[in-house]
Image (cartoon, rainbow over all chains, first blue to last red; front, side, top):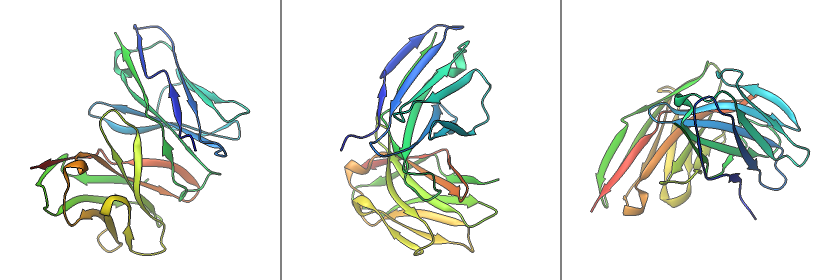
Length: 114
Length: 113
């Protein structure tokens, strides 16, 4: 069974540009979560999508947005990039939303903003 | 609001020694607790989870954790460290109706030969 996949592996952008990160969940999983892992800040929850809808959002500005497609894959968009957006962005998926369902993580996309 | 505190950003043990990684949680309702491991340049892998079925939880790779409500703790242990255990370990909490995980800041485990 294929795991969670993310693309691209690395992404280099300059300040003010837009970045698009992609995630494909495990087959059968309907929930997709996005987390930011920035140096010194640990893992922070960004967004949660389930069945195509945004279910919850972390404490991030509106320039962080995303969507979930009918095949449950997801896209994270970061507009007006700032230097502090440099981080590893992790996507996770799970079965129907439940607090005790394991979230399976992808390898991440490393975003570098110059 | 729920939160997780991991004591010690870096723990170093000798190969064969006991591994003890500390995690304390704060939650207004009974929590679900998780330990994840992250190897260099990889995503997170679940080691074990507590979902109120049993207070002592056994996970993969010989790890286990004990839920202690009175101490609001969920410490991760392994009797004998292997070199391959060197990684970053994250404790996380969630609760019913709010599935996004809240992570601790992580503990980097080094294993010395």
